Image 1 (spheres, each protein chain N blue to C red):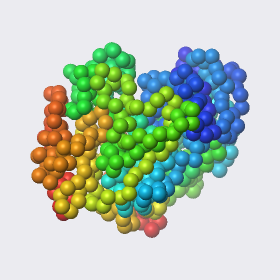
Image 2: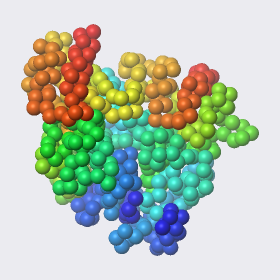
Image 3: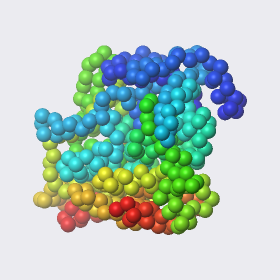
Length: 316
Length: 203
């Protein structure tokens, strides 16, 4: 790990201003991803701003009948919240399918959204990686790519976003609230938070320099059957090969988003129009334009089958 | 430079005391070690430390406080050997900085029981042979003690079938909830038996 200076944030705006002022500052909350990457010198901040003192750890009802989840609410606390379990089951399920008990006790809501890919070449500093070192090339496209993306990927990068929680947030139409260094606040729909890699995979979100996530809001509950189905190489404590977050209504209509296949939670409007016609049609819409490697081509049939299993579970 | 030399170099560096809340460490020339103060309670005893900001909670326990019961396995949050209980919750001490825990109440394996008076979970691990080499054991025991508290608090898991009713203890619940603790000797079935016995006694 490289040396860094450290401060505890006094307020959200002060934290954002401090992050913008320092040459390469990072916020630290749970630390479960950042410290891992700092030990490997993939992340090399010279200044850390500890946001844990900020009072952003509450889950409160909104005026619109939804929930405002503080950026620092831990994954365990969010998954266990009675309102989330009752009204947003897909979110509880997604959180509980990720990481381990120890990690969920520390990992935060905002940190989970901002976690970096687990592409093996991003982690291997001896290999080229356009995300880690822009312009160096992508080792994954012709490399070991079993875990990697099939849609939304580019010539420059086929990394996936590793979060389960973010997939559920996407299907719930969550919104991200932020504060900028000058104190201005804004609301970013979950679908707009993450960028596609295109030619610059090192740019992962639309957040500006110093901008701090303060909360994630969920709209009023939409009812329906909530399912998060995750397919992975072992039964627990592994990243998704394919995951499906779904909210299915009694008439067969619903919403669906995929994890494990794209650089961001993957939700396509056309696929939801096809949902009442079944998994084959919906999967085809979700995977339109897919670009696979020898190692990850299996994900195309796996998406269709996982979606099929979800729809049959929803029918009961 | 090895790690001990680095710590010695860090010790020679001037430091600005870090107070609770809104404080910052002294800015340092690029790449030079930076020190900061933090105090927390470990197993009922308060400690004040002056550490390199890079020091993980795990290294603070082992290298500064010389409490080597907590083990370093992967040092990347994958194996669970470093599990300790902080303010009632189990965490990976390797993925947390010491300076991030002002005023925390930390329990390590040394604080759960003594040789003369084992914690019930320690006794159950001995009785059921819940280990072979023993390296993952402190983490397994800290994790399982806090895990049973999580079940008691009604926290659901990936294998909990109904999110809206209280959790029922079962072997699959224990296995799922302990998946963050890896045992390379493969003592899992005996670990599950040990935890099950303690859970039944507590219930």
